Length: 126
Image (cartoon, rainbow, N blue to C red; front, top):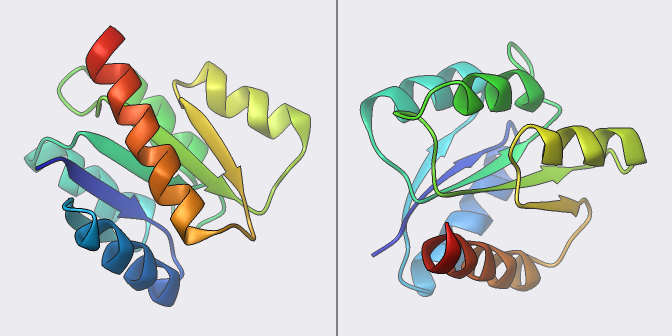
């Protein structure tokens, strides 16, 4: 069962993503900010990270930099969620190791499908 860490400061959105992922057979953990996510990534291994960029305390780019610098923390695949759709932000996420970038608003079902594809690609090729 693939393990996914969902990181977003919107608790309702996290709950909805968690519900949809669990229905598809994923084991899901939630973090509401970058510090919670960092702690989770330091103590557990995850197959995928679903990460919001704009969060209080520690933004998603900062967390991505830390994850990229640590093989122990790095999940197989990172999918970024963001209301920011500027090309510079998208390119920055990819440069920091994201395999997909989903702009808000988005379809939860499409997000779940993209997480599945990202994991299949990383497991098959990475």
